[in-house]
Image (cartoon, rainbow, N blue to C red):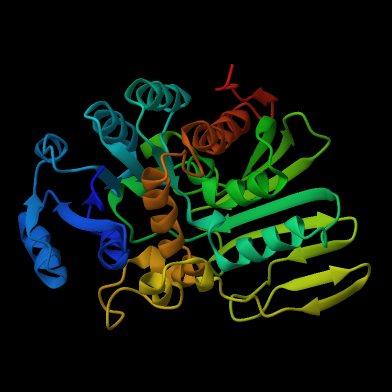
Length: 368
């Protein structure tokens, strides 16, 4: 193993946010970037000083100098590109969701197991400062026994690229699902989900999904816990929210209603607003600054998801650090392929339930 991991980033919209983090991480080398549009490829690569450039994904993964690929392509390419990169002998990090079907999730797991390389779904929600704070409450015992969990991700996607238009809400549910399952340290077992309201006919026609909102209730596997998830993408009036609540017998954590407010911690019936600390101290010094600021000097170039999501809770450098160190330390990343498949399939199966008017849908057990 070389002293540094050679990383290639695919997709330079959201993907550009990660370039300087890899550049400043002590154990990675920002080796190459890949973008289909040549003008954008050179614009971004020139800005960050990346010399190796590809417009072809196939050529990129054929480069023997590439150790790891970080995929930020459109959703429908996630599975195809993850599988191809794994089978080409590359470690893979992929933005959410893992895939668009349960079968694609299975195929990624097979490719990961066959290749022996690491796979990590780059789920921002389990590396935010809010999640790390709630995890600290859990690990210290202050939360007590977890009794219930709730997640919500409401976002207006008008103006985003065309492939988002009419996407079933639960097909992009990992931001709301993952913190619940990660805090409970359990997988989703089965789900009941109802769709509510309707979106414009031209949006419905794209994926055959009519609902403005989908709301699901999950039973967690080998557990007495249930979790509730609500998701909307279009034509629902709400400030952007990507939240989780966790209720314990000693203490509970509730996300704030407005982004400008602070979350509430309950001790018994007494609630207090809390200033969630930053967790940059968990990171190498060179990338700590990225928990509280974007990668550009100004805001004009920042990706819309970063702006709407308030910087994704400082998660980006934590994601990079976990991916790089999992390779260096020769261990699985969190979340690995099996966990990523459960988190992704939770939403896929929830949408299936909503299209069946709330029928129970069992999630596959990818470990079986």
